[in-house]
Length: 312
Length: 273
Image (cartoon, rainbow over all chains, first blue to last red; front, side, top):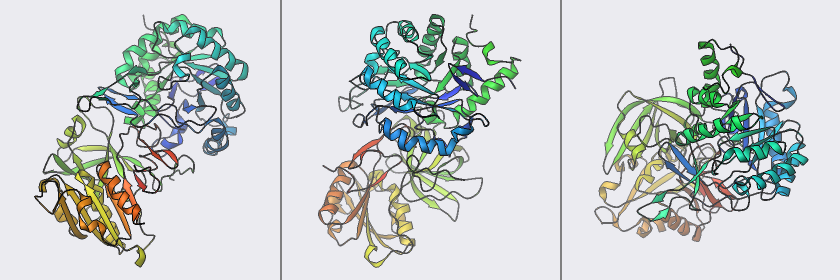
């Protein structure tokens, strides 16, 4: 048994495998189909200060080896999360037993439309003892007011991270957009303002056209591309970012199997997230956590940190 | 122990993931196939009419996601689950090429099914019309069977472009009277299901599945006459579990997932224009 425990800021993860926001609901949706207690972390659905209805249907279009989505942050708001969803998560995981029994870190993905908005949402989540971290979404391509607007400009990114940092006292992960010229510039801005880690990539902006109807397949015209088709782009960006910052990098983008996950680790990610692949195989994240351990054993590597950033 | 959590997980009969075995692949007219599946590891779980299966498609060149397919029939005597597939693209084409004995990775049963009487149907809820169009007739076969078992009187109103587009007509006849409409007049009444006089009969309840304009027209008629009506929607979806929020339908309770809060909705809940 290799050591696959990883530390990200104040987080102590039992393994490096987390599920990506927006692809795994609140985790409990999958509880009948896999053992969600065995995950390293669960990053729950994007949460905003006030409820959002999201975009109109259609919100998805399948593409070659992937999919586009334009969900648009549909959620019931931070107060609903605190009042109704958090207690259900607590009833399932028993957060008070975190030190004595293995459980995933439950991380809330936070979004907003202004730095104040992000900070107010983050400070609500800060009050929940069972939530050890947030992931700041400055990279959603599907909302007009905010989201990616903060993640495609270093100054704007710095202003959001700085106001959230002042309001939030636990581990702060900033999720980066790939829809930029130089992702390392945004990563450095997040680091300079006190982010504990960065996660990347969010979806790549794309579109698809129904030629018979001469219409876009998505209600708002464009959406975010995810799935195995984005993996090479994500891997390149993780490699570049891991060399540009001193905080941990969490890699995601098209990971479908153990070998994909190992590639991200070798590119410099200390942990990884599984997104779209959850839709195809609900057990995939559990399989990858086991697979990483088996791969390390087979290669006589005692500790996962020995392969992080090891690509030559 | 199945996990049910009120705000997040509202499934009455939680899903499982299982490799089902293909017992037979029957070719039906107009690019349809009937997949008859069985569970080699014992009895199939409780499956309600209107629920669906997320099927993983192996070896399809361009598709990636699972295909949501409604339950056409559950044959308890032979431990079989039937899926009626309309071949429309790469994913369904690959499903149509499955061979007897192959395995199919299925997540099921998913979603909320059609209304069922608590035990035996009461007299005031006994006359039920099931209206289907195209491949949308598929879930109505199992629903008709279950309603009949519960003591209800069932009739079917099935529509298609031509006579050949109306599938499994002989099977529907086991459970109730079958009324037909075709656009070319090759069987039954010429026109759409909404042109058939049977729709105007005295029903205590109507359920419908098929193209959205057809369902909307049927629901309109039912609402106008104060008849309880349910619709089974088939919005494009990814996860099938209520996690990704891609398949939402606008309802009077806000955007709801067709995969989890549906696919069956009461007409009064939907915004029908």
